[in-house]
Length: 180
Image 1 (cartoon, rainbow, N blue to C red):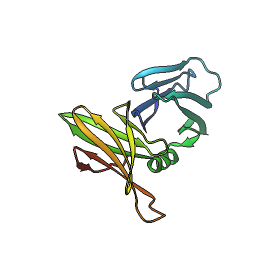
Image 2: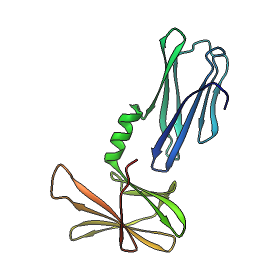
Image 3: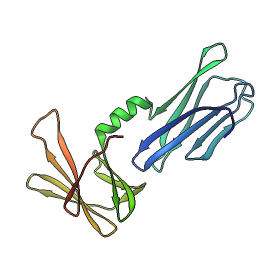
Image 4: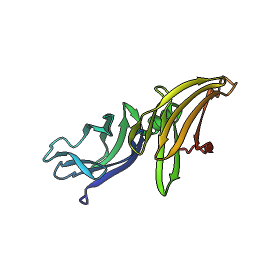
C-alpha cells in the first residue's frame, strides 16, 4: 500500500470478516482496491477524480461499491456500500438476518454464522453440511465441527416482536451469541 490510502473498512459476511482498502491518488487519478490484502482493481490516470467503483467481496460475490465524492476544493469523501446499502445500514440489517457465535474448539478459533433466511451454517468461511429436523418446540439444525456435535435450536420467543430465538449448542453446552 502506498501513502494514497484513503479508506479502510472491515465487512462481516457469512464467509468471514473482510478487510477492504482503497487507495486514491488525487494527483494521478489512481484508484486501487484491495480485499484481504489482495489487489482486485487498479485504474491509473483517471481524469475524473470523483465517481464510484463496484467490485465483489467474499465467496458469495457480495456487491460492494466505493463512492468518491468531492467535499470541497481537493478534499474527498469515501463511502462504502454493500448490496446497495450504506455499510452501517447493511450491518444493522445483517444482525437481523444472521446469528454469529465465536468459540474456541480444540485450540482453534471458530466463527459460526447462521443465515436465518436459508438456515445455512458457515464456519470460518466454509459452508457446513447440516441436517434439519422439527422438534416439539421448534427446529434443530445439526452439524459437526471436528469431533464436536453441534446444534442450532430455533424456538419461538412467544413474543411477536422478538420472533424466533436461535441458540448454538456444542456438545450440549450453550454458546453465547456475539454481536459484530
